[in-house]
Image (cartoon, rainbow, N blue to C red; front, side):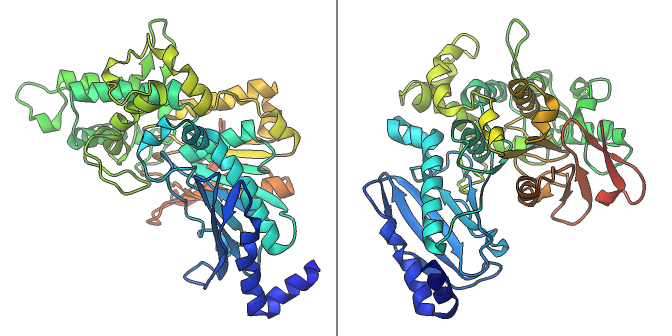
Length: 487
């Protein structure tokens, strides 16, 4: 019977339309599935069937299924920020994937949805899991055969969603790309946003000062790796010995837009030093030097910028919006003023929200036992999610597995020089993470290096699995082939 259906798809447009339309039959008391609609080929997207629906009355999902050339794989795309939208489900259709995404149960970027307990849990962890299960049903109903492999890809909150899946629902996906995961929203990200937002409000920096910092850090540290390309290859090497922001403090008669006041230096150092308690414990790591003027710092700390996922212009700053999450996620009080929160004394109040939202486990043994893989990546110059936290998570995974080598067999972290949050910046940040993951899962070929490029085509670079760093070897410094991975 399945063979007849498949043959019908190949020869009969009417049968093709009926199979797409009939996905509504998957509706039940838990979910409502729309009749599918055939979409003609356009641009790089081939002809496909698009199926939309709602799970548990609120969790919207969308699945796109290529009419021809399905590769037997399911790919789910994560969503950034507060979610509230469906990610692009067309970008890998031409590669043969059946692709889905979910808005996680609410619409729009406003975090007030979290005042509703079920909506909060859906965003935190349940919606992606349920949408993955439903998407698999739709795909297998449409094609009349089983999915061979299931993959997930997301960055920022999407990266968090991926690690939530890896730890709480390890059976959902065979491979996960987790980019710059905000896996500690409450216990780390919230503290950072509060800390630097308060510093900025007390002694504001402008974009002029960010450009000043950018020029100074680049002049001091760009050439440390032997290649002058606008990228600090390993910003951990850009120590105070090379780059000290105190050197930028204004001298007598110097114009304010060419230097920092003593008070502005305090704001700068609040960013570089991070959040440290009285005992010297790092609660939230600080920025590493480089790419200060490339956009991340400005977008998160200064008012009047756009939310990347929605394009919405905001009057305050993204750090202020994150700080306001205390109102709904922690205190359930719309009148709560985040300036009343004591970063050190009130941390215990975050416990319940952290249990819901945060990736509070690095135990990936169940995922590893079933052959699952995680490819995690992070930009060295990510402002909201500084790179040290990703490295710390890798070490936590190693501790849970008990062996560094065994960890590398299923979990790889790639640190990308000159990359901001999820993309952008002066580095070669345009990278295909999915194909290397597929080869790792299906062929056992562990990714020993990745190739990144700049959208402007200026240069390409080799990116190495941490703790290795790409070093220039010989040849053309603008070509990735001229770089080797070394410890």
